Picture 1 (cartoon, one colour):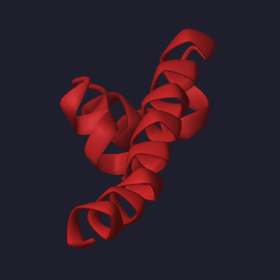
Picture 2: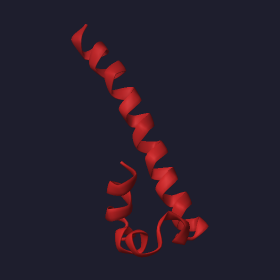
Picture 3: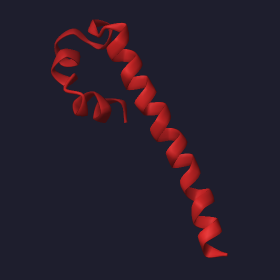
Picture 4: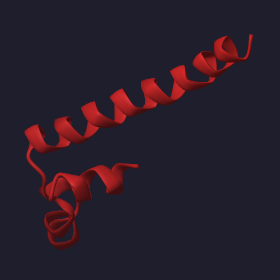
Length: 54
């Protein structure tokens, strides 16, 4: 997931060249924020499916 988000943000080349420590705190925070948002959304999906089945 982390690499997918980095690619979407256009940071994959920078990571390939410099590693994860080459990112600014803003870039790292953006990746982390999107990861958290997607994980929360994935967590909600099974609950929503159960309600639809009832």
